[in-house]
Image (spheres, rainbow, N blue to C red):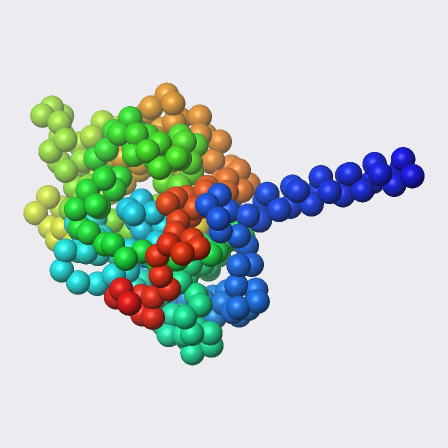
Amino acid sequence: MKTFNICLGFLLLLLGIVVTVVQGQGGTRVGFYSATCPRVEAVVRARVQAHFRSDPTIAPGLLRMHFHDCFVQGCDGSILINGPGTERTALPNVLLRGYEVVEDAKAQLERDCPGVVSCADILALAARDSVVLTRGQSWQVPTGRRDGRVSLVSDAANLPGFTDSVDVQKQKFSALGLNTQDLVVLVGGHSIGTSACQFFRYRLFNFTTTGNGADPSIDPVFVSQLQTLCPQNGDGNRRIALDTGSPNNFDSSFFNNLQRGRGILESDQKLWSDATTRPFVQRFSAAINFNLEFGRAMVKMGNIGVKTGNNGEIRRVCSAIN
């Protein structure tokens, strides 16, 4: 009997660990729709894959959109609401892409299980599927979010910016319950996607008043390459990969680039020059560390300010409040 009790206790301990792993931090859980809409993940995955086949840039677009959504009003799909004065019209959000993917998945799910799946959950699942499609590692996404009813352009003012110092970045992440490790690993999402020349060209020509005017933290050889791609009076909308090592693969080369002075955005490169973030850049240069911690950080971020239970709503279409 004593042996039985020990074994039972051990099994209960294991069960507790499993429950802790699959539950989110804000009332969400893995498998939330298992009874009410069991095909939700398959539907979202299929729609993301279909759009990705015709336009691979959808993947980084969806990943950024989830990030920008969670940092304003919490992960409640507020960024998806269209109209004057909404988050969607804020300067950091005007170039985001992938809205049509979320709407496509929502339309299918409304046919399969009307009024059940939130737009916020669709976006969280689509972000994960985007990483997988670009050869990143998958993770379980807790669901159960409800959609918010508030979307204001003014609320987007505190989104992380490309000129932010490390201290400012840490303050913005800390305000939402994310620590320094979360900051660095989530910025690693820049392993895929691009930036317009207008957001970093100042680093190439007008950053200093001495020498060639370039940001001294950039590798001189890389400066020349970027100056050719983004000439001083050239098209500011031309897009350059944020990870020039493997722009279409979700991997750890982004962090190797930072160590070589090849970060495109000023805020990214500062993660290597700052003593508090440099150890994390070094750690995540190993793919196994980056993949593991990115999934964990995405689950943590995905539970910022979530609305569950009777809060919020389940929108009929993602671009408008019911």
